[in-house]
Length: 384
Image (cartoon, rainbow, N blue to C red; front, side):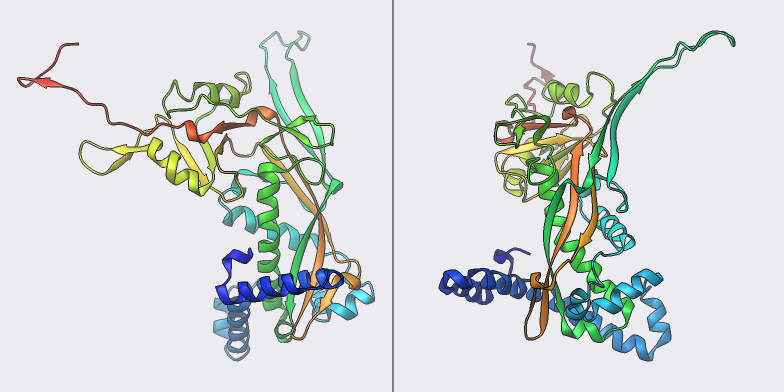
């Protein structure tokens, strides 16, 4: 949750607190600000879970209707320790979040996030994952003939533990009194929110040095500072016509090795309104508006996409993984009056299967769709 998304009164309070903090108090002020923002965001969730917990304790039918998840023994042990986070971390009992929780969280993120539905996630219990694009051919021949078919693959390994993503997790003391399935619901909701924005940012514009390589950057071309070089922003996409999208489709096909049946367009919401929609939708002769593209284009408006640039891509051509979400030391956990702020470190990485799976273009070059006009003379179309 960003500071601009909270109410003005709390926003002003946080800004004042940060501005007035002395240099030696700056770090503590930042932690407290993060806790205040998260507490405001999750206030409704905490109240709802508290109410559900009380009703479920007295009404078995209501409890069943909630569809609470059955926890494994490992998960139950984790949440029992989670209820006393200070004691558990000090005793080194809550080092690693069970991979089953990470897997479920990633699965929920993929289902609920429109843009991350394009990403393939590696399982949480692996440290390396194969990233590959493949092509091949099969050749008919006699039963005793030598094998003449040739299969080739471009294979590389994704080191999931290469980069570290920091997330703030707020643990209200009121959560500790709830039954474990409700603690699970709270924790997974907070984990999902904490990870989602980071994954989206990494997927789009990760620099390859401090995080994954995003689809706006090249996967094997790096600058002197160790960050991935940006892809060339093409200037030729002006219309969503066969000719206007020819260069995009040729690139995404990876030299004709992939068949492109639909396009996914990622853009900033401001550019969606100003450039994408006017080019994609036009007035219909029968009234209203129609999609003017000759092939399916699914839009993905996303605030993490820089203004002025947009991306055409395809699904499942980017692999991302996360493993070993750790809470190592209590010195990184801030205890407050009614909550604890835990700073967790998630080891994660991501990269595309090839550079051709995404095309970055100048979205401001798009032209508004204009309905073709046919001149008619005496009831007959005018001759050209």
